[in-house]
Length: 65
Image (cartoon, rainbow, N blue to C red):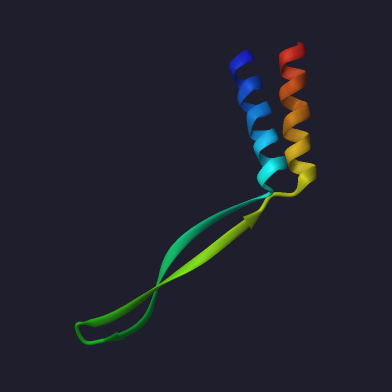
């Protein structure tokens, strides 16, 4: 329980600090025979502050119990 509580606290703090996760995916733009053109497309996932603070509170409660 202690390890899980510490992990949840860490994830909650990181979610409050960064508030989004960005990653890059490759997308095929054009394909003509054996010739292909790929483009990097950045994607972002927004982490709501309510979710991050809830995870933080649950982690603190797990350490308190």
